[in-house]
Amino acid sequence: MKWVLLLGVVLLLAAGCGGGGKLGAKALSQQARSLQSHAAEGALLAGDVFSGRTTRIYTREHSADLHKAASQIETSLKTATTAPELEGKLRRLEAIAARVSTELERLGHASKGEAHALGRELEAAAAESKTIGKGLE
Image 1 (cartoon, rainbow, N blue to C red):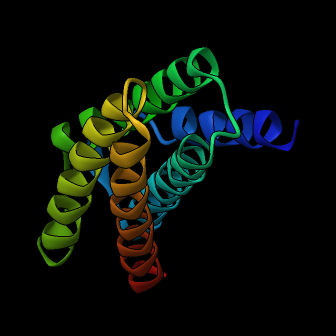
Image 2 (spheres, rainbow, N blue to C red; image 1 turned 180 degrees about the vertical axis):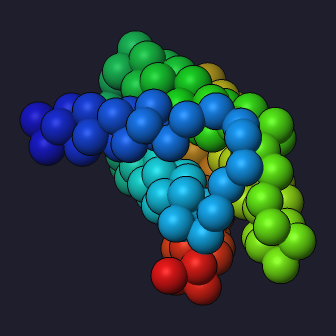
């Protein structure tokens, strides 16, 4: 049940970040935190797939929800602009969001071995997002 509450909070944060526009450091930091959360939750789901602690249907549905949220962040970042000194971080977050979105989509139909690899990739994306977000605070 904790993950349901967490997902709800994360989706609200992602929705509140808006789409596109000019993003400052605070807004980019929020996007980074949302992306970190989606990637970390995806990594946990991948671990459950690998260890056999989840069903195929749950995995497919939950990864689809996470994929949708990550895709929204990716779209928002693609259309966003920022100050020149933040442009590199914006583009790095955009690339991470694209990667996370793709990995979450793949997770829905992944075998145990694929899920294990995807989990490691999602953990790395979460760590990278966290680093970027902290650098914006």
